[in-house]
Amino acid sequence: MVKKSPYLLLFSLAIVLHATAQDIRTIRGVIIDKDEQGLPYVNVGIVNTPYGIVSDATGNYIMQLPAAVKPTDSLKFSCIGYESKAVLVGNIARDFLPVKMDIAPTLLSEVVVRPAHTKIKVIGITHKKGMMANNFAISGEAGQNLGAEVGERFELSGERNFLDTLNVFVKANSFDTVAFRINIYNIKDGMPGKSLLDRNIWFTLFNQGKGWIVLDLKPYHLVFDEDVIVSLQWIRHSQKGTSLSLPITIPSFGHVHYYKFGSQGVWKKYANMATSMNLKVEQEIE
Image (tube, rainbow, N blue to C red):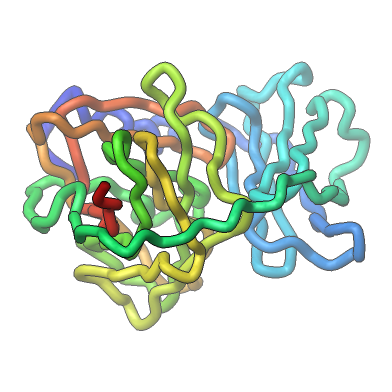
């Protein structure tokens, strides 16, 4: 993939998993809401492991359980706006597992009045350099890494920041169609904490779209006065395609990069490393 580097050990994980894990069981099902409508793009996976996927646009999922998965492991279903559900692998009696998810109670959002005086500020990486790549897709293994996330830390504390756009550079994309979910987390002990969104934000690239992608966040009225982690999660792809990646810059002093393999996996943190992602914000002026 790239030159050897301790920062890139996580990217070789996919190859190791494929080479050592043997699928012994396939669980499939459909995830629905209270009205029995299929829920799109739900995270499905074994908690704290790289084994995870995302349901399709109609809520259907197929999950491979390799030999490394134990009966005491939990298969978890989670989605923004809904209560998470989990079941012990040893308690799954059949290979068809339907799941109904309940809406999570949320407080009414406060009405935020945009101040008369703001200044435009761009936070993050604005160049597209980077000889190395952070790969979402694994060549020859379509969908194996579906549900993976790439995130960056953004310093927003001190002032109210009204999020205007998220700008991301896609280095390679050979898929006819790919879709991403935008996630925003608070920071707990230097790592992604709870989601700060009450609804899903996703976007789709068509016709092998790449280069700078400008995502309009104004309709979502997102305002933060604390540092956050913003991530892209790969949630869908067309059948045809093998490559999907973002550029990586090493070293990138002062930046913090995050990666999660599998939709219910464990976050990895990489200091002085970054991908080409930035936020344009309107910052309040006292």
